[in-house]
Length: 154
Image (cartoon, rainbow, N blue to C red; front, top):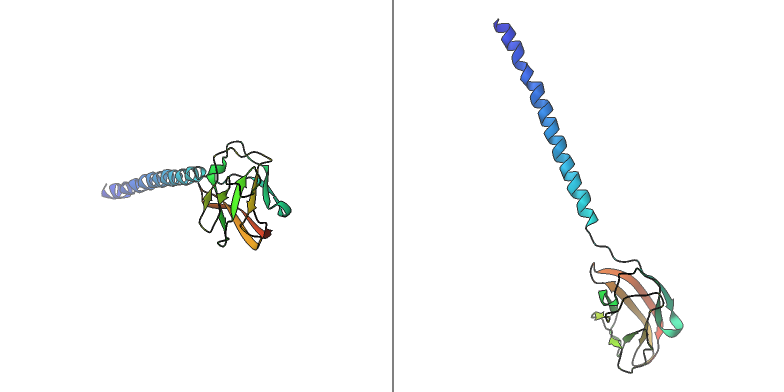
C-alpha cells in the first residue's frame, strides 16, 4: 500500500503546472493590453498640407484638419535676422500687425486653420538664406522647414 501512495503523490504536480501556466498567460495578456492601449493615447501632430511661394515669401495652407488652431503652432528661424516677422493672412509690410520671429519661438494668433490661409514673411532688409521652422507645440514636432533663398524687406 505504501507504494500506491507514493505513486499518487505525483498527481499534484500537473495541477500546479496547469495553474501556473494559466496565471502566466493571464499576466502576459494584461501586459500586452496595457501596452497596446497606452500607444493609442499618445497625441500626434496634425497633418497639414502646405504650398511654398518663394516669390511672395509665403507659406500657404493647401489642406488642414477641422480642429486645428494656429495658436497650437510656433514659428522659429535658424538665425537672428533683424526685423524678421510673419503675418497671418495679410501682407507682411511692417504695418505693425506682424509677429516677430527669431531663434526664440514666436506664437501665432488664435484662429482655426483653413485651406487658403497663409503666413507671409518679411525682414528689415532683404535677407538671403533664411530657414524658418513651423513647430506643433503639443508634441514639439517639426511640421515644416522652409529654406528661403531671400526674404524681402518690409
